[in-house]
Length: 406
Image (tube, rainbow, N blue to C red):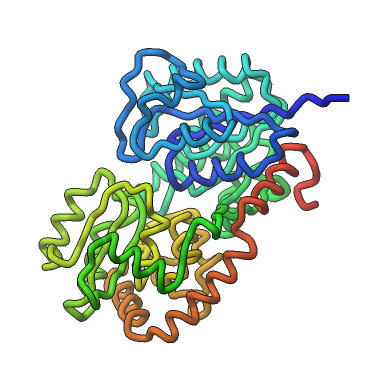
């Protein structure tokens, strides 16, 4: 006797590294004999570039043609997942495009006869949950990778976003939070009742992140670094959230002409980042690589991974750096303390405190024995929990409607 597979639509605004990577690894960890997963995403790439298409909706091969830089939909399609692209689904608020995206998305979900709709990101989570409700989908799941509100917004804007998330929470069967700090914030803000929240970890495949002397040497040769350079790096979009100018200010606090900085990623504040590096006298010792597909091969080149974010969920780049055996220092925001335990698995600093961040970077560079000890402890911690298999098991329970705590 054959059983019909459970049909799942994974909705996300931008299918790029970070939330998109978590969504992809989670979908691929599910049993394909039990689940049929379709990725539904917009047409915006890593740097905000758009697909030039006039069609309202694209599917299959058409959805992955001429994809914007950094887009992971092609990888999902090649792995056997369904692919749907709605170009009007964009990150920024646009009444015209949002109305169109909601109409189109509702139609896609209704026609697809999905059993589960799993939404991700702020815009995808909002429009996706409303569309799923309109399409009478039996089970609606949402992942909080972080929140659209944060302490650096004006009170009225923050209150508006919190109110919207509370309204959406009442239309959600299960909310998954990437990290315990994110889960606690969701409960504290009243976004969802405690019995409908489960903490998950972003999945990272350790096999993909080489470590050791050989990997370090290869990475440094690839980057063309001078001999003896001590390298501080980060990975992420160059935007307000990641505090790029403060990251440069922190690097400038570290003594030594042999200390270089590396940023892997791109974004709207690229010009400001480069200007700040010139202003702080770091132009000759700082490299902005832009978007790269070989991040896992480059991470072992780092002596320290430094995260300056103003707000976060639990960034995949941090987990990936730990998996590569790199000592880490990060701002103590949201779920970051889940993996960075001060003095045990890394160092934590306050957000918007570049001087303190610079001091912490200096400590890790100047105390290599301590840095290696914390890096090893962090890698052991990550390897036990942050795996695709673990995430797939949670999704299987949630999609199947079994007890959250089983």
